[in-house]
Length: 53
Image 1 (cartoon, rainbow, N blue to C red):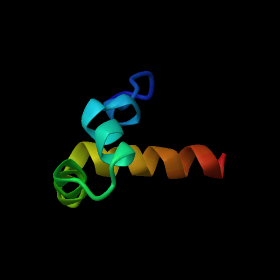
Image 2 (cartoon, rainbow, N blue to C red):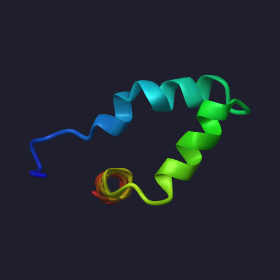
Image 3 (tube, one colour):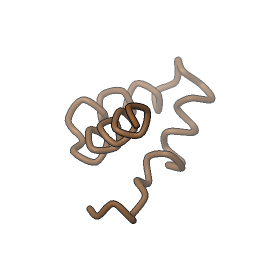
């Protein structure tokens, strides 16, 4: 992914549903998904890089 591309994680509908109802099945699935998803890990790294600047 290039620097010009945005991560979809910021606007992901699955993430929004999970954050709206943190005790739901969708939220549990989302948390599990983030443990292995390479896109989520890249998104987290980009957030760290942006805050360090």
